[in-house]
Length: 120
Image 1: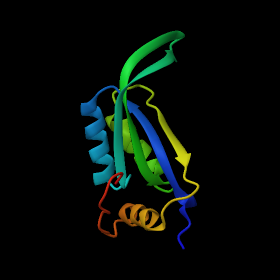
Image 2: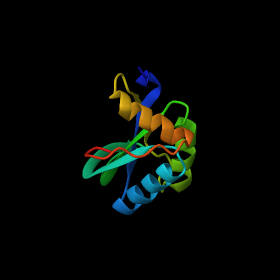
Image 3: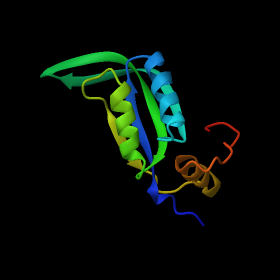
Image 4: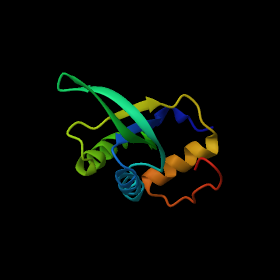
């Protein structure tokens, strides 16, 4: 049985759908993530330079591993328009074994087939 505790889901907010698609495609192509889902638009309310701001954003949910997190951060920061982008990893406590295996194989470049169905 595969232990999914090495997996993380990384949240990245971006200012446009175009940014979301570009960053998501690059993360998968560079094997920094096995899958990236794009949610939005959403409204973000945040503090920046001592002022409260509100903006429309999209949220990327990137499926990756703790080992690939550095590669993911490098890719996002090189492509992201924000000075300080949101990049937060949330640990995976459990996952379908075949899904966890697919994520791991993709990140290692073993060429495993992508599973078919919703959420992949």
